[in-house]
Image (cartoon, rainbow, N blue to C red; front, side, top):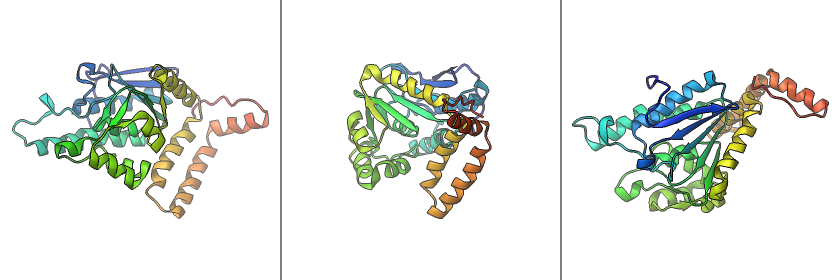
Length: 269
């Protein structure tokens, strides 16, 4: 587990307002290339969300890129270590723990992909519950072009999101997938005009932030687990999750609002 970092980050910005936390990848001069430090800072930011009262998370990039991939240069690379050893350490100690923490998060996650999302940046973008992309953006898994293999959970995600044939195309040919094509594939939630990206992403985040947070968290956990377990196991999981959700204050409010024919006022508890 990464060590906690101070609230002032070097490679990201964390803000929160109206119950929506926003993590902005903040290395625009490097097209938001992600050193291990960036993912350790994302991990630390995720740990702060409960104290901030966040009920939805929005992730985007500063400048003209979402994230151009991993950056293993500089102080994060081990002195004298081989390229393989450096990559393995970064993945196991920084990138993978952060991706797992994001998957376990109990609130909805939205990614606003404002430009290229490559490598680990593509993994991060596709890990969201809702991925919106500007029409000028694209998704790229170029590992094969430099003799490497996909990482950051991409192999797991792509095969489940778009099927074996399209996952194989994307990973073995190493070609850009434009935002419109990504939407047509079902890889992302929506491709939008560039000027509409942040307004639409923020509106969606705001909508989710006033929803029944506990139920939304259980839904995202349930979808992830359903991809790995049997039908019978999923039925049992749904029953357990329904017991938790049904005992929440939001479920009581939702039921009363339905009977009274009014909009529910969810508090996230």
